[in-house]
Image 1: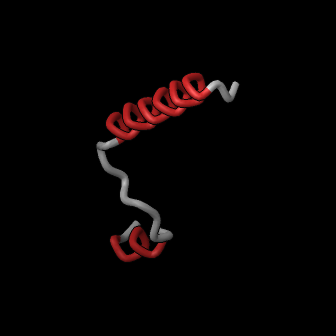
Image 2: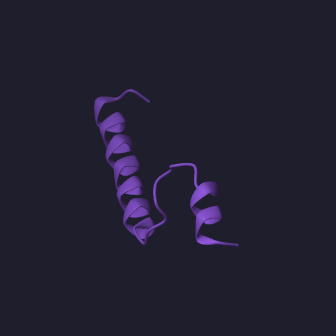
Image 3: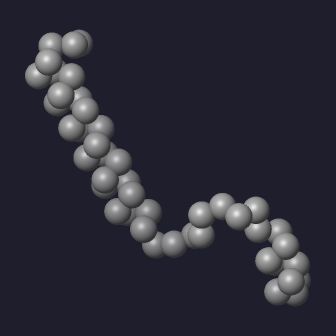
Amino acid sequence: MTAASVAATRTGGPPEDEHNLIEHISGWALVVVVAMLITQLGLL
């Protein structure tokens, strides 16, 4: 497979990088904050 064919198969999505751990941690932190807000406001 040549470099041109590899470049042609990309669809323009986000590049694969090593920030997956940071994204998972920040995502779960957001879930926890939203859950705490919901319980503090008595919405559930």
